[in-house]
Image (cartoon, rainbow, N blue to C red):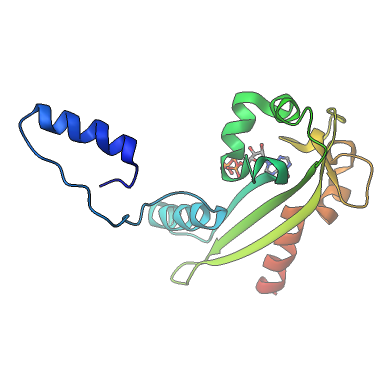
Amino acid sequence: MTTNRGKYNEISRMIQQRGHEAEQLPTPYPEVQVESLEIVVLQGLYWLMQHYERPILVDDSGLFVDSLNGFPGVYSAHAYKSFGCDGILRLMETETNRKARFECVLGFMDIGKDPMLFKGVSEGSISTETRGEKGFGFDPIFVPEGFSETFAEMPMDRKNELSHRGRAFEKLFEFLG
Ligand code: ITT
């Protein structure tokens, strides 16, 4: 039921209070956890295909910060909505390792065909302040490797040449021919 002892203690107490006994099994069970962009994309593809029955394209992407152990990662949308770029900067106020990357997984599924996934990564670093007005999301704090501007300071075409999404799309286009 759970491998967490503290959780188990609370649960078994509540069960005992109702006159029953609980037994902690020694093996963890496979939990459906959304820990990868790929899983989010596959789930999205199948769901959308069921509901819409037409060729489907899904994009799931996120910002992975090394010193935050990959956070916000798959939770990027939620993190952006709740504390935004300033929240990330605050978490990293005293951090010298600013390395980060954007990842994008594109999923494509044609009617009656298997889903196909295409991944693009853009390596870079987190700036020390927000810069630029273009783009969206975490663009004002992401500086791609080899550049001094943030994505938000670049014209969209330049960002697309360098970005995780741009790279994933290159692969998709190659596949589609
Ligand atoms: P959908 O799921 O509907 O596509 P979403 O915004 O929730 O929209 P994601 O789950 O892929 O999309 O969230 C990724 C978040 O990561 C997004 O909200 C941005 O904050 C951030 N993000 C992803 N790609 C980005 C990019 O190119 N530039 C800046 N931020 C990006």
